[in-house]
Image 1: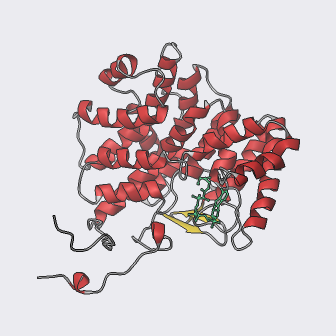
Image 2: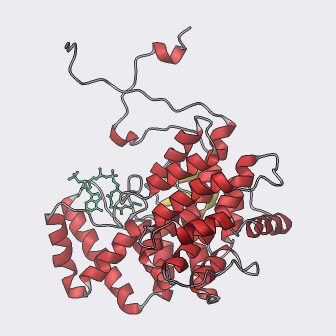
Image 3: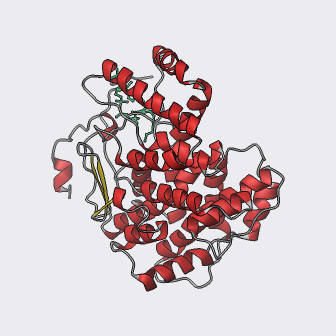
Length: 379
Ligand SMILES: CC(C)(COP(=O)(O)OP(=O)(O)OC[C@H]1O[C@@H](n2cnc3c(N)ncnc32)[C@H](O)[C@@H]1OP(=O)(O)O)[C@@H](O)C(=O)NCCC(=O)NCCS
């Protein structure tokens, strides 16, 4: 029997599904007018410095802030999973070209991990178990690949260090300063979840077919890679490098707009004011970035905001999360082509939270299309 829904006339969604609610969620809420982002009831701006990234990841997955013991167990679990399979290490060393894009390596490694994962100690919930392993292993995959491509010895995870500090340690071989570890921890907190963004939607659509977690995460990584989503911070950095001097900012931006190209790190589908994460990242960047770069970024922000406002008086175009992310990531020593993969190290925890939520009350995503091609052709 045809369902009630299929008897109703189809509704036309706006392009890009703008403004369409596709799920109820208890994970995160964006107030685009007020410029607020809430994780499970907490204002995200209040979290950096007060809670660790691991505590926030736990919050996203479970719905409550961990107590001391819960946090200890969660951190221990993540640390236990940090090492990657020897087969994957050999694959990274022998099969992956050193010139490969790190984000492509990450996407491929997640697929590879599914084939070689250990099936020991399966817990009740394979999504949680495999999710913990994936969340723990993203930094290891990236740091190992980075060192392999630079012909350096890989640096094994250090169980004495927390998630953010350990990532920096595995990349450089040196324990990071407390300031840099905290800066990266804050960055990871701020980027962990963000409503129904494109990669989260991909993850939820993919898991809604009841496929496996790895496939959903691969789909999400592929979606995050695009410059309209997570691929912007390296382009922001390249823009700052290409502008070079504060006096050149206005001409550079006008030239770019004249070529009908967008200014990276500006604009957002939901925010009609400054992205709240951008404010926090700007504060961090002001403390840890090189002062000349910070001054240049400030000038770009001011000039771009003015120019964009003249072009789009109907819609404020302000900095988004990617703009000051690029300064923070550079300052803590992350190479430019690892900016978006590092974003994924944070967002993977949000994807998993959203996948768990999708599975709690699943219905396969299956919208429809309007056929607008030629009618009734015959051969
Ligand atoms: C993030 C983004 C994709 C949101 O897009 P959106 O809400 O779908 O907005 P639209 O693509 O419909 O753009 C609306 C108008 O604003 C303009 N616009 C939006 N962002 C712009 C930017 N960064 N630079 C210049 N113009 C921009 C568009 O050109 C368009 O103008 P038009 O109506 O004259 O064609 C968009 O702002 C963008 O491309 N930003 C740059 C990339 C970036 O920073 N991505 C990281 C996102 S966190």
